[in-house]
Image (cartoon, rainbow, N blue to C red; front, side, top):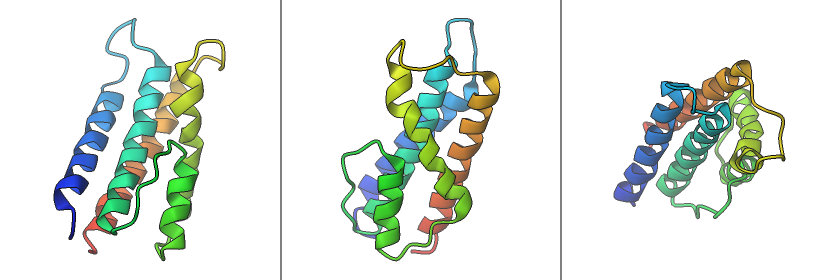
Length: 130
């Protein structure tokens, strides 16, 4: 695989975000919004790693649907349970700006974490086919 070092860097950053998200609310000052941001980042960075692994340009975007569309346009079949990850995009922008969102609940965080874990696992599966 070309660009293995860059792919590994994307995946390391993705794993870092996923590990932070998995740690959860370790204290009263930790916000679900920030944990969900880490979920979004984990999915985004793993998808960008897959793009690089496939020798595709990784667009400078936080929009997960755009990353999935780029993969799909290049012949990669996106499973339905991975398409759902586009919903994580809201956590990349809106929840970073107070007043632009309703507070995130624990169940929403749990769902975001489950989605991020599915995306990261799927990307690793895809990389093993290269």
